[in-house]
Image (cartoon, rainbow, N blue to C red; front, side, top):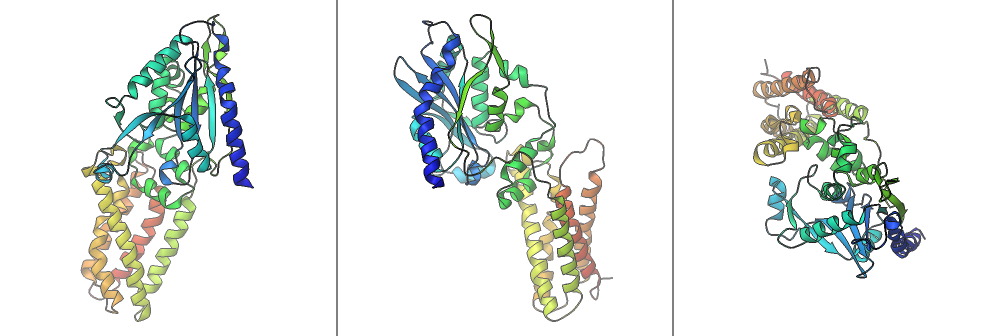
Length: 411
């Protein structure tokens, strides 16, 4: 029944969209060049797949005179492109813009049960012509590809920039320098929070560059933020009247996944997990037999996760162009030295006494790094949101060090 209702809502929206778009030019003088063009912003809510978590948008232009409708979509990528995965890992990604039939894309979004809304925009006829000409030029094969960046050059920033250029800079003028204190990380956290693994990976992988407060202009890398900001903007019509940029708006359905409006505060859960794991390591490591073997399994798994995580963070910092991941001090917690403790875990798994002296010294260095990360939080001018990871890993590393320190030959 829910699926049927979503399809009915989507069909109604598609049937109503020509009427909706036709409302936009009412304030402008009839007969001007460009008067037959109608412009709308299409915004799509979050979807189930990880790359759909941030939503999507595109520019919809209808030409009444020519009887055409085109959706200009900047979010085109192809997994089958040669070397796509390697380029993705290095941060050397190229996306494309395409001119497509609106009905085809909207049908796909409706099939995915994502929220779809259409905002008819009050652009003057000359502004519509300028936007239309630019988008047609941009859709040519030789101009369609662009260097992709999650936060600075994505589908939403491209749409924002195109609309702002057509409007003579009104969007940027009204949004630059105004901030709610949000950061790129906080938006990434709230939008990935429905998927725990994606949330943890993004949260661990982002560095301090994403923890600087951004203004409304930069927040519009999120399509839904652009949608919200356009509702606040006013423009002048031919008669000099102050009118809303958004002439009318329609929404097809609520969507399968609601957009989280705030980032979650899970620090207490990270801390509880860290203390629980620390207590488990201490209990398992304080005896021989099966408990010692179990210590090898649990400690080995934790050291493998932390060590490989550190290698990945090092690779993102020094081997890629993902500047959002540079100078990531989570390296003090996801420490590559943890990999050197895997032989210790293997000895414990076989029922033998873990290496005392060498293992304890390595564990001590890891604990010292975690403590330094904690102290960094109080330094003036320092900014990286990592208290969650400190709450998780500091107790774990400290407990492992204490267990190894008590082994024979550790002193």
